[in-house]
Amino acid sequence: MPEIKPDPRQPIYLMLRMKPPWVFIDEIRRFVESFCACACDVAANRESQLALAVHELMQNAVPFSHDEEVDLVLEVDPDADRVEVAVTNRCTEAEFQSLKERIERMNSEPDALRHYLAEMTTTPATVRGGLGLARVRFEAQLELSLSRLGGRVTVHASGALRAPALKVPGGAHV
Amino acid sequence: MSELPVPSNPFQVADDKYSALLASDVQGPRVVFRGTISTVNPAVILNPFVDAVHGELAKLGQKRIRVDLRELEFCNSSGFKSFIHWIERIGSLPEAKRYSLHFVSNPARKWQRTSLLALSCYGVNSVSME
Image (tube, rainbow over all chains, first blue to last red; front, side, top):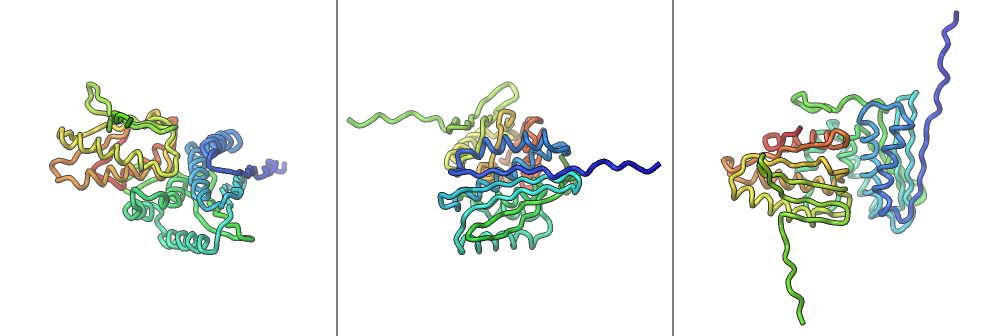
């Protein structure tokens, strides 16, 4: 008797466009967490990690949005075991180059925790920003990349939907 | 007529969506954070609070303080820097005067465990959690 394979599941999308985005960030984080908990068969903690990533990427985007819309796309593909958060905003050439350098510097360190700890040491406590991308990479277990189209930049954070338990040297994990 | 100065308590701060205060009970001093820390630059409010609490604890010679996050819904990376600032203040004390931060987390707020895991790697000797 032939083996019956389950029908492949379609990827699940969430798309939001916000203007002004700042006031909605807390509400969007809560919504994304609920959305992921309901719509995805994810491991414990994953919906919380994805909500954290959405919050941090949106918070990064807002100061550079130049009063234009910020777009959020969340794509969950259970069969491919993949998730991606993409946040798009307008940016100048200088802002794009600065962000590109930051992400290249971050990705040049293969150990996400080591980079995160280095950012904690070097990012001034009284200056806004600087830690969010490193936090997304380590705590949400997502790799970051950039793309640009027509004066708008997109930060992509992608990784496994069923991410392993987060571990640190010494054996502690969650 | 000039306004009278408003009395302020450095051990208690609040913004629209969050608050922090230094309390005390039978188990000793406890710092309680409540709400959602998600403003652009919370360090403006939280760092002076951390500095005041740190000064008080160092003066009292405390060895351990509980940091209660059970009612903290979320903390963005800008707010997270205030905990890093706190660990750095502890590290700047002479070794004999240093105290530790014992974080009490809420299992329902799953981000707390991952963030505290990272923070415990940063403050290896000054951070513990439950």
